Image 1 (tube, rainbow, N blue to C red):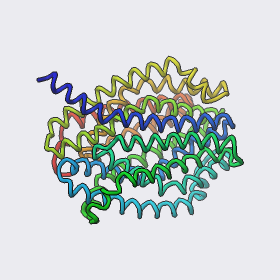
Image 2: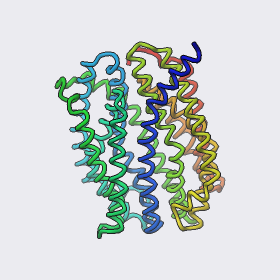
Image 3: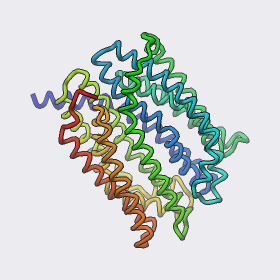
Image 4: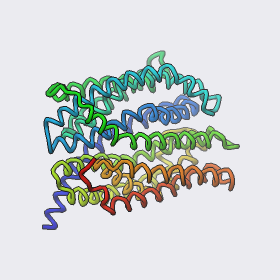
Length: 438
């Protein structure tokens, strides 16, 4: 009986996770290619790509948050009420279409003002402005791609989403190399290639869910409101997280010695670290769908046990990957930069952050379970508390008051992740999130 339950949980966890792991691996390769090509041009371009990537995450936060609500609801409806699922799909597509158009217009007209408010090194500001201009036009296509991927994921069609993201990956890598090295577009091709690929992905996903959209053409305000209610805490978390990342970049920019070196090192470090993050976020997204589907079937205790099993499975995989990355840190970072100081500091960042990776894995994957259940408000409180109550104040104290500079910032980030994981585990273990009222 126990062996049968174990196999069922393993099958459920892995079948939902492996396609997402591949999707996130494709996204990682896209990001690492951006950093690699930028590094071949100059460390200023490389630092700019890292900075703009953090800002762009803020621009797409509404799409990610809304998708969180859509996945939580549609994963339950797909196994519980198929007609309501179709209504949710129509409501989600109409809503995100309008939202993305409005936000695209706002971004195009305000990105310049945004950069003027942020303290960035003068030598990278022109590049940041060029990159943000292109990213602003991508919001419409990216928002719809994000939501449609969520719909496919929640309705047990993750392999179609995988196909789309494979095509996005191939187009992005190919056009990145072509635009930068074989056309007059030059360095701007790094982000223009992403715009090209995301636009194609948008068209593919619309094709995949075309029948779902028009099976029941009924916009349901109550479903829209429910998706917003579940999703907005996730949006606040993402804004808080990305703003904290921007603050970290600003701290590094304000260091008295070699700020550009540390900015480039941080950019490279988080790109390499995303190798470790891949399974965590994949298992987290899978956990949200697993819990949602099981909630739709009224199997609440299975939802608890399966989500905990998924977190332990993911933690084991991530620990192994972390060891491999740490052992090869110098070699890996040398692939992203030719500057010896950047390589040295990137590796040091990875050594320190490695301590927190198993904690990060368990916390992140359990967050997926809580989000899938709709318990996003409690998740928000715990994440923001560890982020703004621990990471940022501690980074300021260690870096500037105690004089540890960049190393103080790295340690503050590590400590905050450990605290966050403990808070999330305590919430999950309480089982208070197992309620049928979201």
